[in-house]
Structures are given as C-alpha cells and as structure tokens.
Length: 128
Image (cartoon, rainbow, N blue to C red; front, side):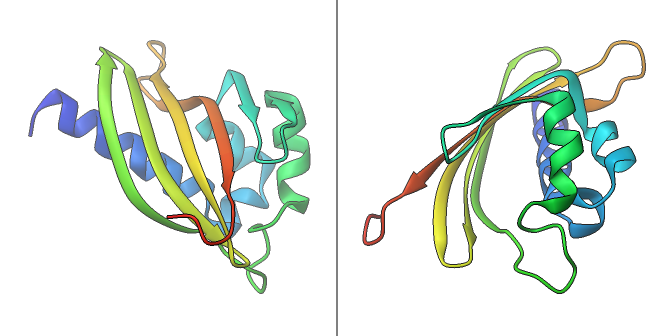
C-alpha cells in the first residue's frame, strides 16, 4: 500500500473508533484519539475544545451501548501533506443526517494519528 492509502486507512480507523460507545464513554480512550489542540464545530454550531469534548463526550449521543449509534457512510480521504489527512463522510443518528469533515494529523513524538479538527453540518430532511 502507498503512504497515502495507509494514512487514510488509519484516519478512518480512528474516526470509527471515536464513534464506538466504549471509546465515547471513556475519557482516557478518547484522549488517545483527539489531538491536544483539537477543535470541533458541532452540528449545533457550538465550538468545542479538547478539554470540553473529553469531559462531555461520555454524556453525548452514541456513548451508551444501549442507545443510538452513529451510522457512517461515504468516506473519502486525501493526504494533504505528510502526516495530515482530510476525511469527509456522512452520519445518521436517530434519523438525523450530518455531513462531516475531519483533519487528522500524525504526532511525531509517538507516530499516532489524532483528530485535530472536526466539523459537522446537519442535512435538512429530504435533501440528498
């Protein structure tokens, strides 16, 4: 596999782990996947920092084994530069759809891929 293919695969794997209820419910596991400089603009328009996201994620949708889960689809990715991947995809949760965009960067200290930036945009009902 090429460096680009490997990097995109690693980013998608990380993205899917962040949707796993066990990871969402565990601040220690989510810290392994979020960059310390992480920022998110959520589908509500709220801006989230690393510390806010780690603290709040256990109570968010998708964090309970018995509750609703994110259903991702249509992943695409591109290696923007060495150690920087941009992903786009869609999710469905409780019947609501969102288009998502994430930047993943590789930490030079440990070689791990972590989400650096994430944005979710709601898709109005009936839109394709």
